[in-house]
Amino acid sequence: MSKALILVVEDDPLQRRLIKQNLEREDYTVYETSSGKGARELVGLYPFDIAVVDFKLDDETGIDVIRDLLAQSPLLTPIIVTAFANVENAVEAMRRGAYDYIVKPIDFDKFLIVIERALERQKLRQEVSALRSSLEEKFSSRNFVFASSKMEEVARLISKASRSDATVLITGETGTGKDLLARTIHYSSRRKEGPFLAVNLPSLPETLVESELFGAEKGAFTGAFERKTGKFEAASGGTLFLDEVGDLPLPLQVKLLRFLQDREFVRLGSTRPLRSDVRIIAATNRDLEKLMKEEKFRPDLYYRLNVIRIDVPSLRQRKEDIPPLVDFFIQKYASREGKKIEGISKEAMAALMSYPFHGNIRELENTIERAVIFSEGDTLSLADLPVFLKEKREEDLATEGSSLTEKVRRLETREIKTALLEANGVKSKAARALGISERMLRYKMKSYGIT
Image 1: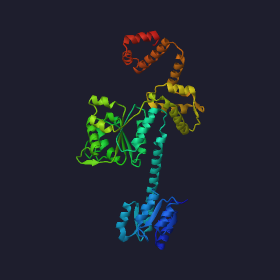
Image 2: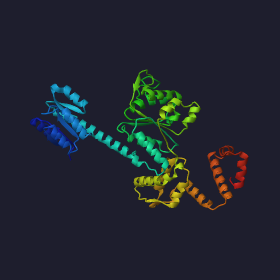
Image 3: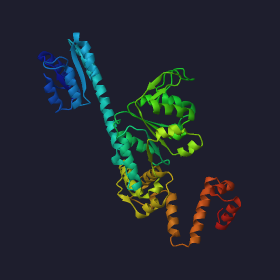
Image 4: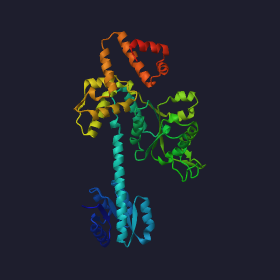
């Protein structure tokens, strides 16, 4: 089996034959041509891994050929061959896209080492390209599942944000998919070839947030034994996603504001300003307007972030999205588990539709994943759902046709039991959560037979 497919572009017949023979001796498959025109035709026909191109051809330079070959096949790895006196030209060729250069007369032992290194680089580039394609597909707007008019508006804003470089602010409860929206915007934008870096601000100790975002010079703080590259610098050319930006400490809000205004930042322990071509997408589940009134969030930063705002509604506000999401998650996890599950029963879907899903899409997805794992049939049933969902559905069925008094009793019983569970049985704490006195709580517990 051939180790790789290599194209040799050389107008000297003797040199071309020597290169071809040495490569074929190492089990490479080699195609050869004497001109740039022939090279362009062959690259259009075969998926070459490497192109070995002489710098001086009859009617053009190897730089011109390399430029056109890379335009045809971006993952191709070109190597330039040059006479000793033209090393400067070879360096120029590398600046234009060549991976390395070989000097004539060719030392074939060194030449084969360069080929091997080039193939390692080629393999890495192919893996990165495949990963990028996978990410682009995963976060493509085609995988954005919804049926509600509320999410149609969100999709419209995502489309506009993807065509812009403006700062985006995404708001919504935990679990509504703010991270997914940010990645969808990135992989649908002109920056998709650049990095996407995400920082969950509350997960970082306050003392490390600044160095994590903006970097730090050696010796800037205890334990800084070398220069640290921050996320703003590392994400240049791409997108930086600041998750839960409402938790950013006030001193760092000033530094973020400066970057949004001037596109400049300063590493911790330095005074030299640096620039970075990075787009900011921020998200929060907190009420920034309320935080501004409490002087916990800077108004000027809020206005800089709030250029394109996307408010993601909770799943409770768009229950018509539950059925298509359920179908999507069933297919996803049935495929992973190697199961043939064709759908979900009416009873199970009714239970999902009546549940409030305070954890939003994240909670729904976890519920379906669990149900698929435990299911033994080709349709998800009520029995496959978690116990709390089954109990909720049974309670709903029991109250259908009941009197108003009976419905109130069942509702209060459920709420009291939940409050007591969350308060670890402490009645005073449960009463405060319910908004009633402890005396009233004890009375209702006695009336409803709650122990």
